Image (tube, rainbow, N blue to C red; front, side):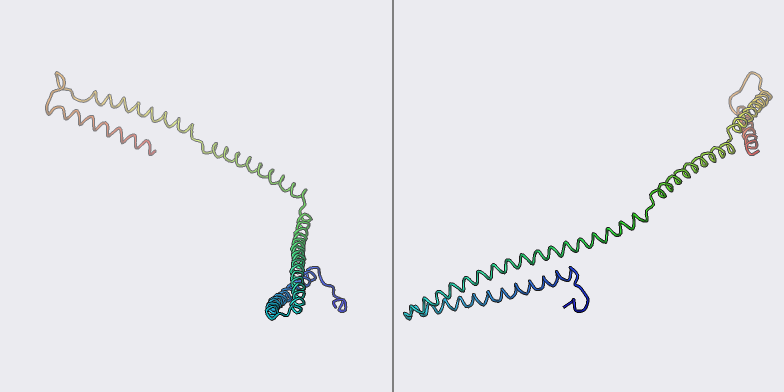
Length: 219
């Protein structure tokens, strides 16, 4: 009836409709098969009863009816198996159709991405990025060299070491002069309490030398 309203069913809707129809047919076959099996049991009971009563003509007729009933039951089972196979095929078609629709959507997305992706432009951007990175590395190296040259103090250290050595040499000479001017007792150093003034003079000279060194370093 869809054509009356100007609308056509989609493949998914058709597959769903056919699947529902097949499921309904399977249920109807199961219902008929159960009814035939009940009829078979009733026929067997009637045959036994009539056989006991000696009604052999009726027994033969009902035996033929039982054979037909069992044949129908077998046919219903075969029909159900065939319908289930068809239903499985329809379910497979539905799955394949869903997969095809998904692949169609993915294909459209890939087409849009490929359409938007400008490969020459991307290559140009990457080349420009590499160029700017190299320029930045060169500038960074030049800045480091310039800072090392500006802040380098190797010559200052050598000059300051020479000054300190000169001062120490002069102070060493002065120390020798001071020590030579210290009063010496005749006959050399004596033991006991007379050794203390010499040690005191030497310690005072060391303290004076250390103080001058500290003043030079602060300057």
